[in-house]
Amino acid sequence: MAATVAQTAGSEKNMLLRAELRRSERWGKLRAFALVLPLLLFLVITFVFPIGRMLFNAVHDDTLLTLMPRTTAALAAWDGNDLPGEQVFAALAKDLRDTWEQKTMGSVAVRMNYELPGTGSQFTSSARKASTLLTGPYKAALIQIDPLWERKEVWNFFKRGASPFTAYYLLRSVDYQYGADSQIVATPPETAIFRDAFLRTFGISVGVTAATFLLGFPVAYLLATLSPKSSNLLMILIVLPFWTSMLVRTVAWVVLLQQNGVVNQALVGLHIISHPADLIFTRFATIVAMTQIQLPVTLLPIYSVMKTIPPSHIRAARSLGAGSFYAFWRVYFPQTLPGIAAGCLLTFILCLGYYLTPALVGGPSDQMVGYFIANYTNKQINWGLASALSALLLVATLLLYYVFNKLVDVNRLKIG
Image (cartoon, rainbow, N blue to C red; front, side, top):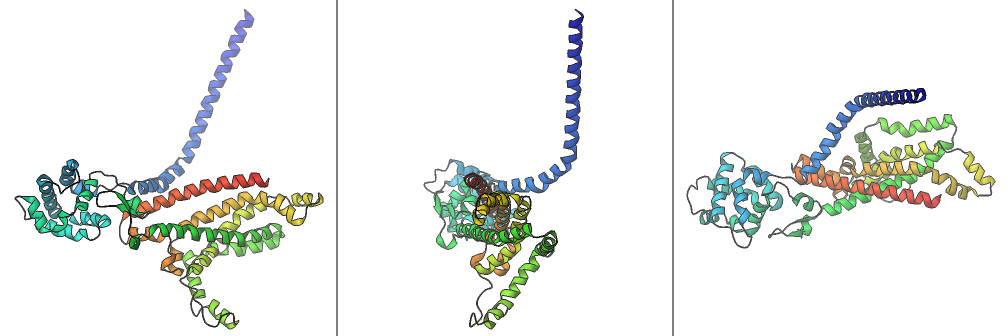
């Protein structure tokens, strides 16, 4: 009996201790969460929310639904075969008068110009003339005001506007658009520019990443094997560009590569070329300038990993009969893969968003997706298309990041 009481008391004591431990751990987690809460809020406000808003703008546009509510509602029953009936034209006349009175016809005109270039001015003119159109029949009167209202693609455009969500911006960002019957068709060749822009962006980014790796890997190896005094001096020279503005470094390349620049003068003086070459405003200038800017970004992660590899590994491989190259390739190089992956991936992702450098040293055919995003954001104020381009670039970056990590893991297993 006494033993049973003692066991019961011990069990209760253990339960109390466990409850106290859980309470202490819970308070510890709450304190830790409170410490990181400001950083979490900062990331949500400055990173997560803007990206979410960008993705939302890529598929959301309620301009027609808000400013042309009668027309979009009346078109819900339209079969799309012939021109709409008198009821739809009457709704259109009322919406045109409202947009003229409320000074909102410009927003609708801009939205129309996105999908149907040149129709915005016709819409504005129709709104002005329809402001005095008080009685029917509206169909004949509006067609007489402007033949725009005889075009079936215009009515299909307004019918699609009944939904606040649209695929137009995403389609346009991959050179597709809506046809006259709301079918998806390819954009005309003279305006199909975005697929080439994406291919150019990825091509330049891959080229710059490869160049920084080929130039940075030997330097990183040299840094890792030099004495601390020499290594520190060389490291200062490598990180020195970080203390200089990217704009200054890019403009310096403009000075170096121009017709009468230092590079051309040196090549002519050495009789390598007979007259100055066109180096500036070319793809070559873009890749060279971006490589110089991104070189430390690729080099430093590789060096940080190389610094942790014990030299005894190579000595052990050599003592077992391996040649210098075989020991390097089979023992040393596989251990540097995490640094190579980190440096190259970081450089590649940063290159995807380049805008300033290609704009200053590249030609018209060298502009990357960042240029178009900036153009639609700052000049044309087309937030939908800018968001769609940004969203596609983000998705492509995430997919490439996933594939790149998989490839690195597979190669690491094969080499190991």
